[in-house]
Length: 399
View 1: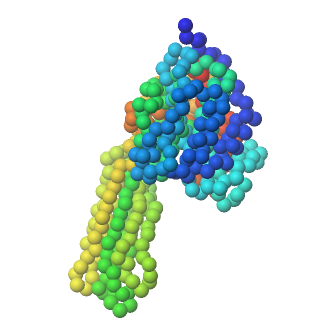
View 2: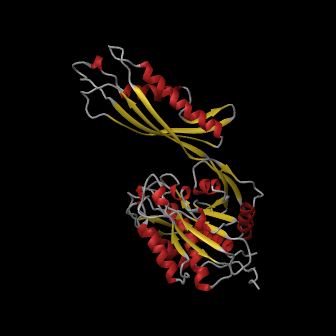
View 3: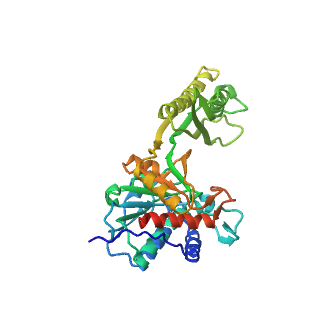
């Protein structure tokens, strides 16, 4: 006979949770360089009694355009409760700003002792919440349904770990939860989609003092295109006929000297919207502005520059129905723990975007992150503990 479902709310050992998150925050984990942090998590699982053959890595890094040292870490447990398998995930990579962070506890927060770095709470708080849960279950032999724990790589540079995860290794979970956020009562059921654009503007080089009229400035072409986008409301927050999106040119590189008409400029840009048609409209407007700018500028001989424009759908938007099983279960647990569930839609991409695209509808929850991707980043400890409590309650399927 299967074990009966637990009815007791698991208690969080805050001292243990604090020690664990301080430990995880000390490990570097730039996208593509997650070996040290993943091997440490594996070591902790094995020391807690993870069964032989329960830990594996997939080959997501070999499929990712970014490459990388190691794939996603996957840990699976058979259930002691007869119920559908549940999946828990939290990416381990951090943005470059967090490299060299020195985590210290100050009052109710963890911050970086080095004021020049971020902390890395995005997303070590999520990775830590599910690791705490796995360790508690292993060491205390808590009853639980079949469980899969997933620590993805390369989220910060394109959600590549989730995008290229080996779905067959996950054990066909029916309820999926992702930790990557702040407030522990927020239940994120959807997120925007995005195009990434690579734009190369080609001009004609010439001596800027001797024969500037023979050149075609790639910088001038790019500047004209950007000015057109800004003037006509296609850059930044974009609103048309009740539909909303955002766009941004985040990288622009070109030129070597002031006495040369620049013949090459490269740009990287993005367009986001929850509406797939409007998102494509944004991307096409970028293409149109750059192509038109290339035609508008010519040298004394009538020669023009050109534009190579490449756009890729980076991730598709999604929105889970509020009555879908993972949403209902997340709200139930958050409420049971004394918090008011707050349904939310994210304007940034999440690993849940790709998990949902894989046919695994995934809710995203929070574990205390604040001021992420900045040197002011901090981790709110009470929220982290509550994030751990939500994870442990979901993992043990407590009523």
